[in-house]
Length: 92
Image (cartoon, rainbow, N blue to C red; front, side, top):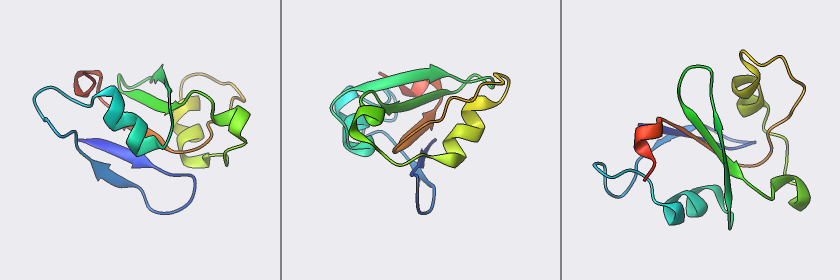
């Protein structure tokens, strides 16, 4: 099960249309509301998926996703916009 993390509002579980194959690029773009995605490997083995152009678009900072991203990194890098956090096996 993947987790959708918006900058504002509740987090919620999300599932790919095909549970066996995982999220398609199109599904991720629809969830995140973007045209292209950027992925980050996480310290716990999950993958964080964000909007590649989120900073250029001036999207809101996502403090919950930033805290998760910074775990084990010690960096001041902030995540912006909507995020999907999933296992690598959930990506097609």
